[in-house]
Length: 141
Image 1 (cartoon, rainbow, N blue to C red):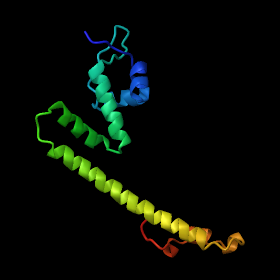
Image 2: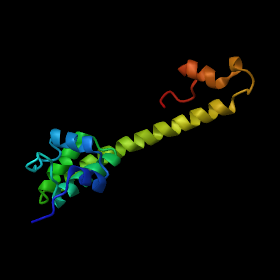
Image 3: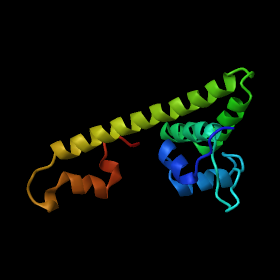
Image 4: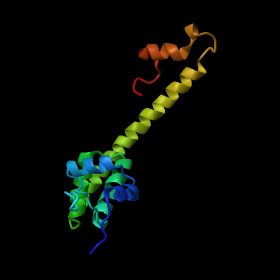
């Protein structure tokens, strides 16, 4: 029989906070976990692997629905991986869009700082641009 661990041990082992673990169980990312006579959740090695999978997917920015789909795919490993690829490609597109937005923001902040007169706030380019988005060099950041 495999070793069972408590929710606290699962939390420490996988780097997921206890309330988050309870939430994952509540929304069905984790199956209903077995309980002790004292009604405490117990986790086996498979539960810990699944919890670590969820944590890693969240760290990579996957949304809960995408993780749910990926877990379903993981549970049936004989399927083609095209669905998993599509989910990863969609996440990559989101990341690339965010990088573009952050680069525009970086440029905008650089322009604001560079054009600052270092005089009084009344003449400060930073304050001007923040007060009037039309003065931004990039419309989307």
